[in-house]
Length: 182
Image (tube, rainbow, N blue to C red; front, top):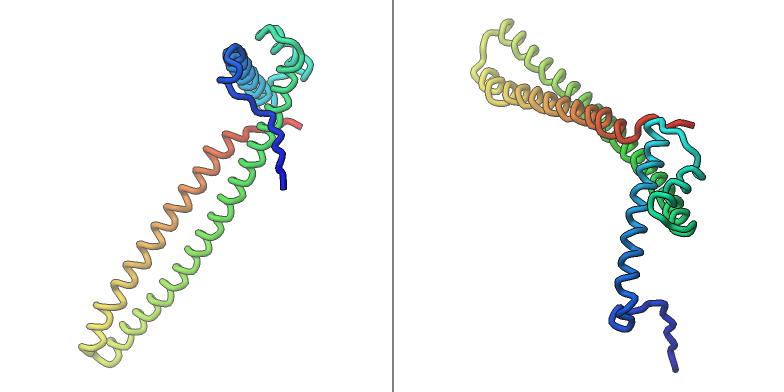
């Protein structure tokens, strides 16, 4: 069986005179793309006001190009901006989910702590009514007190994590998103 391979690739070694031209074109395209993205970002999040045709004319004039490269760069920049906005939205949703999970863990630990504190109070009432038993004191000192201390520490660490997630969401993600104009 015969296999045909049709490839649009070209190699620099086969066309030494095109190498510099292609590298120059790629460099110019990337600079135009960067400028287009920056302008579109400013328009979307920082309140800059201009139309797509004005952006296209600006890029043509600044980089001394014809229509093809600026139009292509503007379309790619729009796609990148839209993808970044969607990614940022997903990151905010993930942060919200993490914050909910941490909140649930905090509530679980707090209810567990309340149960252990109630158990300790029962032990204290029992010892006041019936006198002290060495076994009860030992159980309280070796099991209940360290458990209370451990649960309080876990709750404190979870609250610290929750605060960090809130700050991350408010500072980093909201700042990146800015206020989208409709």
